[in-house]
Image (cartoon, rainbow, N blue to C red):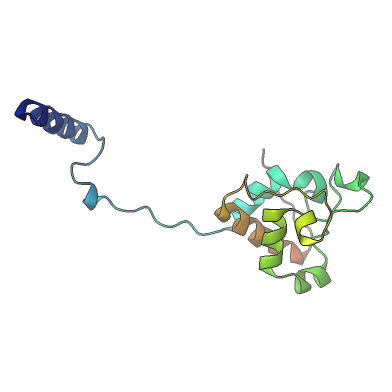
Length: 139
């Protein structure tokens, strides 16, 4: 590489650093904190992806769900909450109902949701064990 090209690269790096662009020494960049699943994030996902069938309060009475021959899962059912594992719930979300022996109408969301969103959704579904919430509608 010619010294003129090296000088140009060096100048671009310095300008970018001064203007707040990439750092001159990437090894010194701090890594972002690892996000953890949260029921608040789960509520956002639930409101966008699950409400239509499972209902705002998780009772399986959403506007689309109440017209199905096989009603969607009622997440407030204590017996189901005690019997289902987090892995089973995550698998149903990820793979869809048909893949786990449930309703074939339950779509697989594994390609649409991140693992963080799936785990957050499981956490939120677990909060419904205490009965219906006055969950705010998230657009």
